[in-house]
Length: 342
Length: 290
Image 1: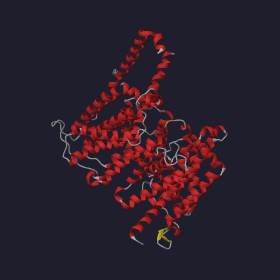
Image 2: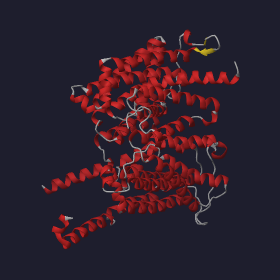
Image 3: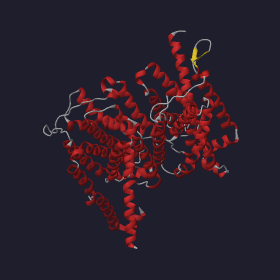
Image 4: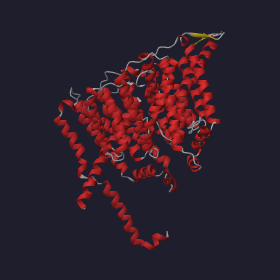
């Protein structure tokens, strides 16, 4: 208290204002942030025949965004994020196949709630642990869900999946078309809504607390932050978003199999996020786009070389570009800015 | 013999053989992770590489199965040293995430490289006559190969136990796992110790990979599919504990086999359920340090 008394009431006011101003400034939209959305809209007009692929890119970007929330901001390293994607995918899949609930938008909400509940329950138990134990527990959760699905393949369809699902037209008006134009715009709008929500979270005081937990857990405990509650909250939110991405995946592909729970799926989304850059929101977009386009191109040439390529990219990213593609751009930008100054 | 006793004996026998495979392959991972806290997801790739060396030696060069196993462990152990020296070493003080990414990248590269040279079709290995067929123990017959696996595992446990508990190097390793800084300050070269245990662990993994061919068949994706099992054994047993790794391998091996015998549909569910149950109660594993 002594320090604040010497500054005086006006000094304290000014410091508080400066802090508020800083937080608000971060919260304001910058012009450059329109870029990815303009690219997404331009892609709609430039590649009208590749819109099914475009939807997949956007879905993976949303999935990577949900991982960014827990990995990039809260620092939770998980190997089982596909669990929530799978729960969302199966929620709409089972609802359409077994309950004839084919309305797409309410399906998204159902998927978000189902994945959120699973995220809350597993997060409550698992987020007390760190390191290898946490890695193993998250991985085991995803595999156990997959095995449960396999055990009741009379309901889930097992590894053959639930093929040929049909969904109602959006708002009862806009129907599915052969090139996936409707779905591309639908996914883009959902992604924009989710992104706005995530952006609000990470720049809120809650988001600041998450970054604090990532940087120094002990200190956050020491200043009385409810660490476990915060982690469970963000884990639940990220699970819901991954669930929505999974639901969109099922709706756009009109089929789903148990492979959505695969370790490969968890690893893939992590690779995307790392390539783009963690803890910076747009890393998810850049990573998903770069990864999917490269995969689309190279895996047609040779899946073996593609797998080698992902491995090599990961190794190089860890050794030389720990902050991803966006981090590289940022470093390059800083480098030129420094040179200009001097 | 009554039906249920027969099944119980089968479960115990197969479970024991499976546990020996898990132990041989995971023990090196446990010690290296205990020493450096390094999350090594490329361990399965060394096991897979060992398997393919055994396949090449037996099929192309006519080496016998048992000598091929020995050569494979030596070759893979030696090859693993440069990886540790030039890649792993740079990330000892990094976060879990970076270690996970580097090693999973290496695992992907290994899978792709072996797919390129050996193809994705499962490989088998020619066994000598004395490992084929059954061996009769008086009250019933057991498959010879699994009996061999159990005996080999028991012998290795004895050797490792002696090396760990009774030799100078073993004492150094235990000291470094217990408290790395203290061990360094009394003059133990932990870096060199680590390179040594890393090579030894990779060699043992290669041995496990060679032994696994007959049990599961060998494909390049072995590196990732079974990696999960090795990590589970290490996590459940407790990092850096020989006793813990053995206990975890036994528990998981027998449970998994029992699950597959009694409830074939549930597949791998049991092993994960046991893992979660153990880790929720004891987060550091059976013999890990909290």
